[in-house]
Image 1 (cartoon, helix red, strand yellow):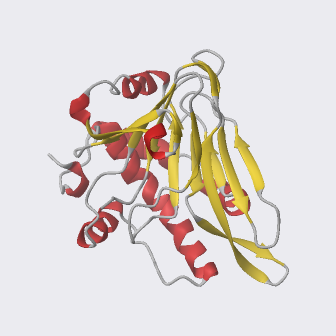
Image 2: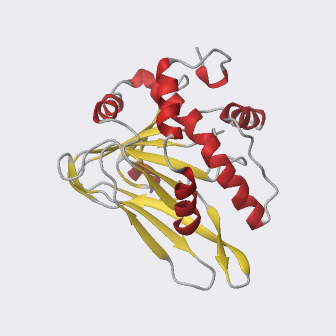
Length: 249
């Protein structure tokens, strides 16, 4: 069953995910996103959940494509895009996180003078994506080993792109790997770029701006441009799951 557009009642897993997402202080998180372009959701996943997702990586049946970064100039490392139906935990997270982020995204677009407004429910937004020819799932599982890194980039897959995404660290720094910090850069008009290094532990998530966000200046709001990446992994193996809310062509 494709749970994305399902009308069935939420499963116990989905209810559990919804409850833990709703329990965060979203006013504070919105302020972090508004001020710095990113916000940490500590302990979004339990260690056992992180390990279960990481173990999916070699199982081809869960994925629609496999990308070797070096072949495309993306960096060094690899990742796999999940197939529909998504694993229940990831589907539940995508559904639960989206409404909290949609309000922030709509406020940002209003402040930047953009016309696009996002519906309250993720299923409605996916219908818009599919109508625009964007029907391929975008959540992905990334794997890094020593020497791997991810170049600064933006995850845009078509005309419809939700402006905030979420990455969850599945491995424990210092135990499973060293290096591999999540990095966000922000370019402001006529200013040098600002760098944000985001400290994450296993199970922590970071919500961050994909492309543009508004910043408040002395003369009102202006637009800043963001990119994200991962610094060089120095030892061990690092897994991350990325939750992108728009689908791809």
